[in-house]
Length: 79
Image 1 (cartoon, rainbow, N blue to C red):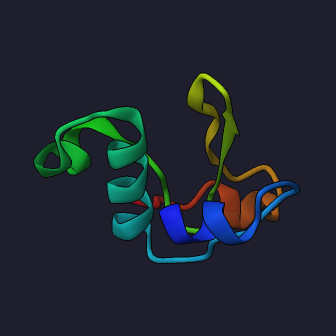
Image 2 (image 1 turned 180 degrees about the horizontal axis):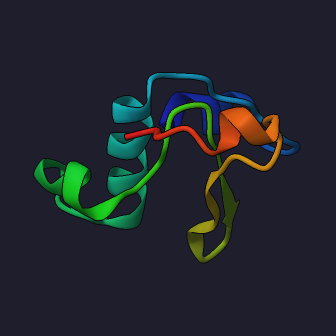
């Protein structure tokens, strides 16, 4: 994430990964113990999470949104 921030100082960046990796990244950014990622962050498969970076640090704005999916897919379990 630090490399991405260094390379892209402004604008939006899309990071695509498996949900475990996304949850670990979110824990790291939010100061949550990385070993607790399964218990502390609920990011479902195919979901979108948005983190905004500003002078105060990272702000989690959206977590686990699946509204972009068809309703049938959106309602499937994603754990």
